[in-house]
Image 1 (cartoon, rainbow, N blue to C red):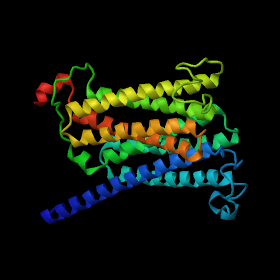
Image 2 (image 1 turned 180 degrees about the vertical axis):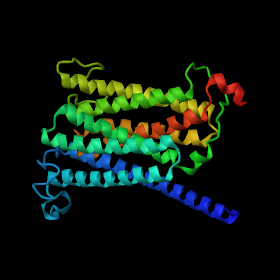
Image 3 (image 1 turned 180 degrees about the horizontal axis):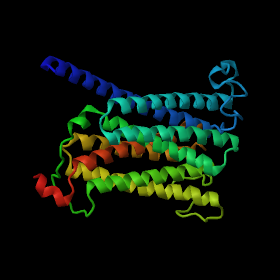
Image 4 (image 1 turned 45 degrees about the vertical axis):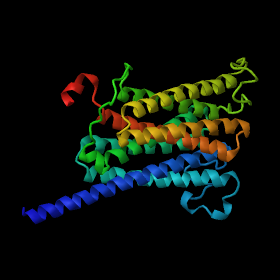
Length: 330
């Protein structure tokens, strides 16, 4: 093969890889929008506005007349259409990745994303057919967050910068902590995910206003747990406190030890900023007695917090050498 042909093939492959990355990024953005639309369904209590599935009042989902998109039908039917669009994007992403990607791990990650979106569609149908059982609705909400993380990982792993090799990030200070940044980001991400599960449990058990004052609980720091709804709601508040501690800890670690590394500093800063926005929206949700847009924004921002933490975690695990190997890297 001549040099000019090899160059042309390399340029073609590079263009295809950039296209795949951009498509994965677009899929991730659409998934974030889907989570927002799904939040609207729960916030407006429209989950059973369309009682059949996969049809809509006996009609094909894609030909259902727009004139009949009224009341809760608008939110539920819109959610189905956006979900179908994201599902189609995921099919294309999985096929494109399997054809264009040489890394087996990335190819199987795309297959995992495809499996997750198929399972998510089935769970969505079951929530309707079984009349919104808490367990199925919870699984539907949790899998949505998992799928979002998978697509974000796809967008990151297919990026040109990742494929070129991320630079090694050495700490500028001697850390006094026994936990490394990769492990810290993993624990933080896990805490955020568990907190989102508690949030989903609170939404699907109608416990969002079990405690109607904030920051106190019935005028107390710790309320009397007279009902399970109060216990669920308060556990979500405690979870928010723990997550806040973990995110602040992560942010300060990056700022103090990896300040000069923009690949770590920027997502840590975004994560820290989203935390305060999420806390404000959580308080506002209570004060507004679950106003639709505020509650939905709280759900969507929670997903963005998780996604940002996943991005930071993946970068930290690749860029930051573990202590036992640090001398070798130097």
